[in-house]
Length: 373
Image: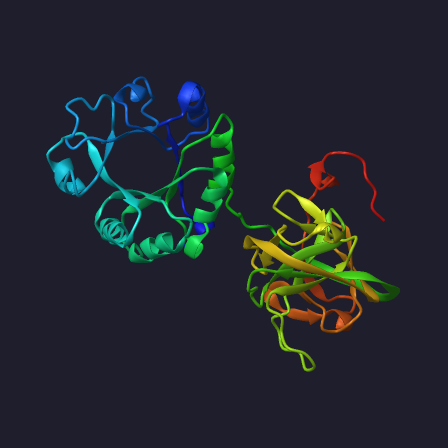
């Protein structure tokens, strides 16, 4: 299952939050965090049952008073096996918490993620290889893995490790607002887009100008590309360079996208001009069946080339236009992933597109009068 489709948790770490602890809890509850974690039972008093109340055991023995905790995080070496502990404490759940600092603790983490219902892990070294090893060890295991992070930037990296990441993130926030930023990273997802079948009404040579090739940091599929158009209300699906060419090798990371003033989708709600993209930007890769994923731009190549205008119409009557390099190896997708060489298009041919449906101001959707000709 892809990372974007899995349900992943947001956990709040109250340890060492300081004087703004109350604000942190209120923010997390408002955002429907799945759990609040602390080493002081008093912090869990009064929390609603909609959130899992997690107590970290810090001493050598289990506390006599666990307060309103639902779940105890224990050191499996000092305290024992979580499953056995749960069997002896009715109404309480148990999970392992492990600090990975060396090969021995890494092996312990690998063992626990294969056995335990829940494992919370903190990685202390500035490398993601231990997390990769733990995720690989846990493949196919039913338990959940939560990783502790210091900031949202670290969380965003954890979530992409091995293309799956952990099942949740435990954030130790540095101030108000961090919880909100975490939910934006963890819960962003990449929903499908509705693609429509467009009918080509004509193609025409239109002089020369600058066109942009968008080189991504991902291996794109044969039915995958990016949506591009001269008008924000209608975009055509330009395919990646994953199909054979007689005079040059394939570039599976590239989309020969279109003239530099063209719109593309940087996200489901945000458009960008092709000339605005740069190394590190995000663009939305789209498949012929509407599935999407954000991909990172590695480079944008802008060069002067002969240009070709493709005109099309949607079933709604919306008129679309795309200006691309005037060469047959520049391709667009049709229904079912059929590949069309742009210079061989003719009136009546069917291609795929998307109708965002609203005008744009600095890339954001807005309801206002706007004519694009």
